[in-house]
Amino acid sequence: MSRFWSPFVKDLVPYVPGEQPKVENLVKLNTNENPYGPSPKVIEAIRAELNDSLRLYPAPNADALKATIADYYGVDTTQVFVGNGSDEVLAHIFHGLFQHGRPLLFPDITYSFYPVYCGLYGIEPKPQALAEDFSLRVEDYRQPNGGIIFPNPNAPTGVLLGLEQIEQIVQANPDSVVVVDEAYVDFGGETAISLVERYDNLLVTQTLSKSRSLAGLRVGLAVGHPDLIEALERIKNSFNSYPLDRLAIVGAVAAFEDHDWFDHTRKAVIASRDKLTAELQGMGFEVLPSAANFVFTRHPQHDAALLAHGLREHRVIVRHFKLPRIEQFLRITIGNEAQNKALVAALKLLL
Ligand code: PMP
Image (cartoon, rainbow, N blue to C red; front, side, top):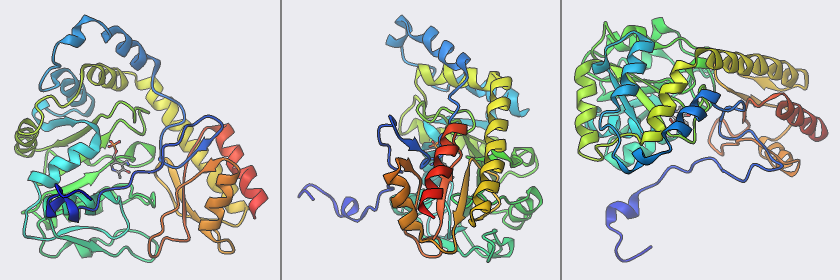
């Protein structure tokens, strides 16, 4: 700690991202990246942009990307916001759209960045316990609040909430912004973007890090009522008026335009998830129903920390959270066929 640290910095509890070790000789199944890589058209588009134009600032509003996303989802460009990964989009939402001085509701087992943003922006977190089966209890989201956020499917559980229940939460809270974080929605969920036309308090966020395999490019987005988007633009422009660099803009546009690659790789992940789930169950694991590109699983006879440690010795890295209620679970990203095979082989040696 330095004498230059303010009390604010001293009290900050930052997010700890999953480990990013060198991937050579490692089966890396710990941070929900996509094993298939981005569309070749993304690489082509980025290569084509690697020229003298890099000396120029990018478009301040990333208009080309907003137009592509608006077209893709059948909304207006005034309903689209983009940022440097959905983490940054979420940061702006916490900064400006949740009411300070009133509690923010979110599930008690969820994306661990939410409480971190609460700390950063002075928002009171009010986590709500999940049901026995790890599903979200809609009735808990009918109490006074200054905002609501939850991932759908939830992370790290993978459990999906239906659109009707999301709509019930949105309807029950007309004076709060309800944010549905759809980081993993393309692996089996249904997007709530279809509801934004009807509700001015609903904001949906997505990322290109998972289903479009561009975690390294850092592109995220939000879709909602133009007034909510305008608020996010004001915050963004007070912070950094260029949301995305030139390479990210052209790469993200190409990713949305390559429907075939998206569909093919997404379906491959879903098929692998179903296969891996059956294999894990065959070994005695309990696996929560997942609509994401990972599974959340425990073995009734084996300690999760020991399993994670043992897998590591076999050069397979998965995620283990030392948190109440889920400390016996492992979160395993769906890999390609060879990676999943290596995982299963290593587990067989450990059981
Ligand atoms: N939301 C959830 C639920 C996540 O798991 C992640 C990935 N860690 C994010 C948002 C952020 O993704 P990104 O910043 O890569 O868009």
